[in-house]
Length: 235
Image 1 (cartoon, rainbow, N blue to C red):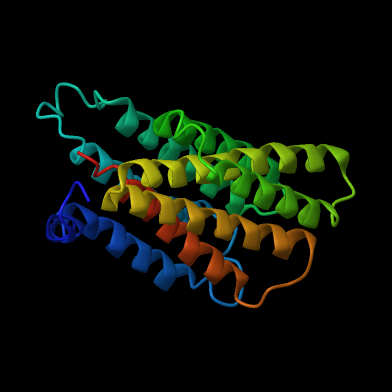
Image 2 (tube, rainbow, N blue to C red):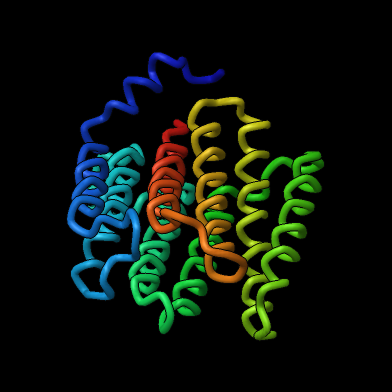
């Protein structure tokens, strides 16, 4: 490993992550997404996205630039595009509070977020065997979920989204395969959790009801975004 495990552990204890943990707890305490979805209110959307804003601040503060006040945008594309991915994810979060009326806009904003994550990860490791593995998984996921959708437009959106998220997963895996660092591993695990969270949403919406689905979705989603943010501690 290029970075020692002890150094990564110390970084994970960084005080900059405390707001993310606290805001996540606040959301779960206030809106208790355990048995039912939270109310479709502005305040619910606001508190739902706050942990992601905390991760945006975390990524920016750990970008390595010394002149943050003069240049709030990170110099490195990796950090810049990851922040954009987190930002568009937060907009998608807010949309999904209104689960029925704003589901499609939320899906579109999350698609844009994954596109930014692709830019952040770059071309990945060429010739990696993981590419075929993830595309096979994406194909199976799409066919499984699309079977419960009658609307052709929604099937098309699902296809685009599935391609994007499984490509991001492959790029994250390829990055870890190439770099063999703990941040790369955390970023990969984060994308896997993100993918699993979306899979739960798809099953619950188009296939069958999952008990405690909103709780499982949010736990894996917040964990996934945390992994993505920690994946920027590369250098």
